[in-house]
Length: 489
Image (cartoon, rainbow, N blue to C red; front, side):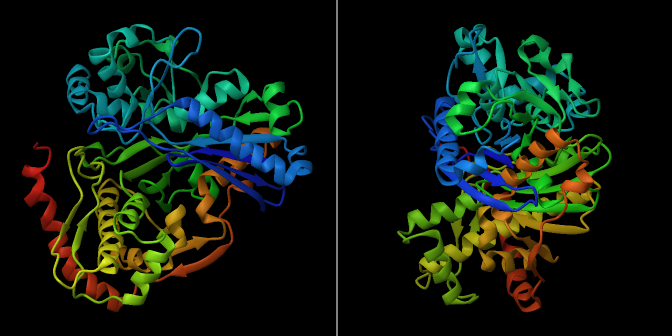
């Protein structure tokens, strides 16, 4: 038996997987995000640990005998977060999250200090990355910066508490802007640009390598036997890739989680930073990835559900489905509720409904949200192809994968068939469990990280494409027209 533990933005999820790669248990515990100032997004790392204990405790309560058979645990988690620790490994301040936009000025400083930053890191400096966040702390909270002894990514903070080891995997480390991605090693030049050196960094392993053993006290609390191995693990998106079999060139997936991600695997380092496409290490040896990231994915559906007073996301989706495709009364929606990354790199971008009329009801607003997110994925796809990405086969994972309607809209907007897999909504946690297995058994990724059984394939619908084409043409005009107004008080 193996466990995947995924530290997301809105919850910690744990899955229990058997030797036949069947998911036999799922548990989760909710998290909240704090935004004490505009552009800020933070979480208290103590909340992660409480949620991890709650999720693992639920698995123990529901599957106690099976938990005693667990041999390995894999970790996955939200990427980029700056978890700052002192010499005693005490947390110095709330973690600055991946969707925090405060460090735009520090990005410009880093680009100026390191002329070959994009060649080293495979990315442009963006507020989402860890390095500019830490530079912001240095310039705005110097006492805290002076006390920093260690910087960890969110999932690796859980590892520290679980095992006592300060380690990270290559994929998550790529998301800091401190890694030489081609060399798969920390960059002294990038660390120096933020006033740090290698002593503040965790050790590096591949995602399928052993990376610690769970402490006896934690094992007892979670109902595990002694000696359970923890794998290097992965950032949430590379873990999702391992879970859905995106571990060979040409395979790709779309993740509809809190954020939106378009991810493809490759056997070489192919950066395209000028279009805000991320080139990073994959979680498996000898592989790299290209990744387009939208800061606002299924979170937009959650937002419009709450804003319109719908009973639930499922209830709103039912309303949208019942209303049909109707073009009348459906406005356009820019899904930039917390700024945007690929391809805009604009933390000041804002969400917009355009074209409201007397016919616009709750279902029309919800429909606009589904279409707006799909259109944004289309822009990501264009940026990735421009950067040399090969997209032969595209799967869909994440919580938003549960919506068949959204799948039809996505397939039409992207003009490509989309494959849905059994268990796709728990992709990162399932991928983490696979990495936990590899760390224990020494099996190959080709044997274990296969595509799960196919639930359905959604083909592009020509009638729906025709309906969306006119909306897309007008949608593309909105951001350039409104950009001068964003970020103004």
